[in-house]
Length: 191
Image (cartoon, rainbow, N blue to C red):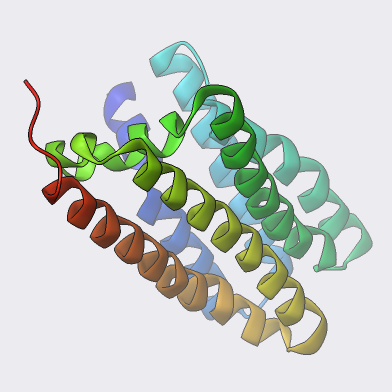
């Protein structure tokens, strides 16, 4: 039973459904903030109970969400939660670059190799290029978020967060995997 609940809560689509459902049904950013804080807290609790540990990304996101979400609620200002999105994207981009310099492109290679075993045969230079592309693209998304925070309405920001970022991430992953698959095809398969 607990494992089933954990599986449901850890589905990445759930947070999008809750985000869209709460905001579009209430039009209230503060209800949205509370709902997201509650959902991510439940994710952390169930991951700790079921997996006996909490993933680093989830824990880090939760550690930013709780204080910034609380400030959003207590001060009645959505700016704090909106900034969390940029901070997370900037840190993800920086972490990719830093881990690349210390360990090579292992982080992205681990994540993207699940898309096809032939990606493992892509040369290291291809993985390096993709790591920098994804890093800078992720950092750019954080800056685009700032544009929507300061120069667009809250509704436009919500739509950007739900739809714009989804499309941008699909473009980023599509370009990256297309490039890697092309590079992998040029390398012989190794046993």
